Image (tube, rainbow, N blue to C red; front, side):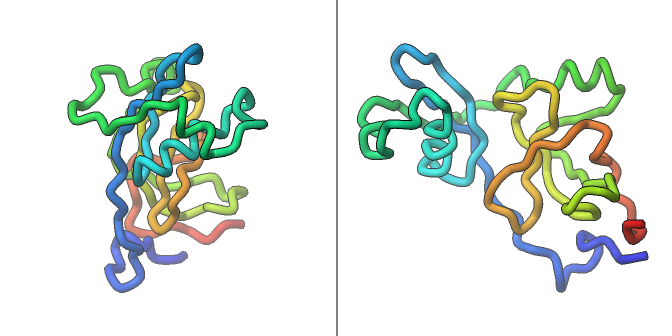
Length: 150
């Protein structure tokens, strides 16, 4: 068994300050993106196939982005709560419980669902990029000890 990094302050990576950004492109609508900075939100929005041939400088000329100050009323996890019975909430702590995952045992925080209503978007501690996990692959109650993967 290995000790959970959340209960060992010496090895715990710093918690990042994720923020919500509204990103709009004429003709494509608005998207809400959880990111560490406005620049990171723009990079994620640019990953859309429609902007593949466009340079980042060209993309910046057509996009509008700003940080949201008010929390969203819909977090995008209603489907997961109703279908899987898992209480997923934005900013709640979680851990990767799938022993087959390369991220098994890592701890993080749930982010705004964004484009995917079928997966849980997680910012793992020490990572700058959010990852999507199947709802059954994460645990919402972080145990004191996490067993080694088989």
